[in-house]
Length: 131
Image (cartoon, rainbow, N blue to C red):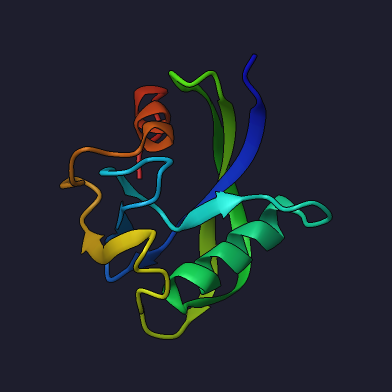
């Protein structure tokens, strides 16, 4: 039997472009994704979005705005609920602080997103969300 996990994804805009990373970690290897990760015990999803973004990119976010969520099922039996947030009050320069989990970070126009996109982002788009 599988398990259910809660994750977050942080949409970061700068000069009309969005930040995505090329994943190397076991979960989502080879896909482009927003900064994000799992919600840890005792923290809110908003805190997780801010923490994960800082840990992965060195960007400091003071606050986030709720966007949407997805409910995805993976072949290994895991169910992921991913909560998406938009970064507000962003400071710092992008650095790849976890090169073992992410090959690189790049900025993309919302109408020219890279492929392949991580499943939660594809689900979000398929459900009609536009960036």
